[in-house]
Image 1 (cartoon, rainbow, N blue to C red):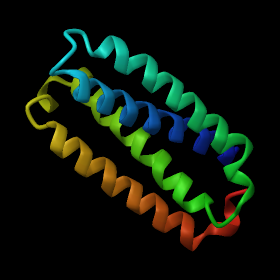
Image 2 (image 1 turned 45 degrees about the horizontal axis):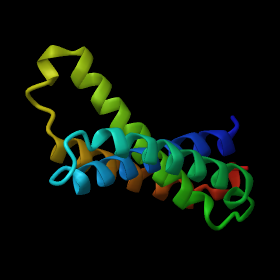
Image 3 (image 1 turned 90 degrees about the vertical axis):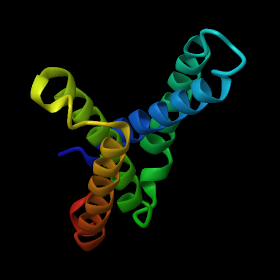
Length: 122
């Protein structure tokens, strides 16, 4: 498996979500359609983070577990969002706080697994 690509896409997704939500929420009080500013900023930040991970950060083996943990957070948030969208019985269970808690737990587990088996991620 190409772990470099998995990490780059996941870090990009995580950076996109973090930047888009942060900018949107910071501007929500002053700008009516703050998502129109937050989404392009998120796309730019996510693309830059994915490119940095793919071409620069992955070269350092000591950073790989952290990159895989951050990537797992993005994938987990997308998975929880997809499940709450597709399965109507899950919608009542999913909140922003629970989704973030699950995503952080998945990220910590991915970091721990990648740290213990760092020789398998090239």
